[in-house]
Image (cartoon, rainbow, N blue to C red; front, side, top):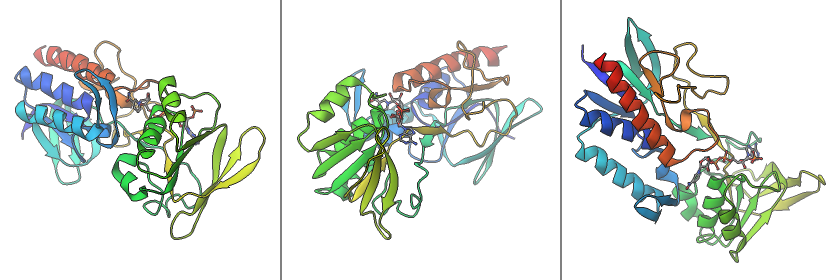
Length: 304
Ligand code: NAP
């Protein structure tokens, strides 16, 4: 039975940084990733202020990360993890097509998009409703679209969509934005955008494809229909931690509390980092710092 020193779940910035440090230290390590290496960066229209790149399209940065992994000769396993358990001090990582074993595990599996929870959301997905401007934005060239959310993701994707769409509406449920002020300013100054607050979506209109969205002012309860061909719900993230079957690792929100210094979870030999941690600010560099800290702790733990 091949037992890895460390298996890393997720090839985003945290998983990649962990893998590179452990590989350089000579450990027997692999990354399991069910999608493209780079994680959420792959769907980011633009990453700002990443050291070395003032502004870079997300997929281009993901390619840089991937080539970094290749150069370091880190083993990549393309599979989806379905269960993580611990038996007799060895972690068992079950995937859709195989089972793997490791002395330590790093969970860097990130998050997935939060849904609006409106009727027809599932039905209209792919028919005017999408969660990713970078992936699907080109379908809406010259059309009118609505972005929903007040975080950095919604703001950046709205700015990106303004380069493609005829008109971009953005609604947010509060008058204050969670995202950066400079992005709000940049968006407001574009000629083909309208920012509406405090508004929530209350109905998706259309049967076979999206024809509009009914929105409601949170304060006045006034309702109006925005005639749009595309809607992008960008209202936050849900942690990808359902596969963890070891009790006490995740909290009530599905995020993973860790020791601040070592990134070890409540279970010895099990570490976590990146967007899966309970924190308000999610940034590439923070994920990398988690990866570096965990890797250092893993090396110490395995040397004991
Ligand atoms: P976020 O910051 O959590 O923002 C989610 C937004 O959706 C919030 O404005 C929230 O409103 C709103 N919302 C939540 N549930 C809603 C609902 N049911 N209906 C309507 N609106 C709802 O998420 P994010 O924008 O995806 O960003 C995640 C993290 O990544 C953040 O820390 C962000 O700074 C970071 N990020 C960084 C960059 C970068 O380039 N540096 C780019 C993108 C994202 P409330 O504000 O009222 O809660």
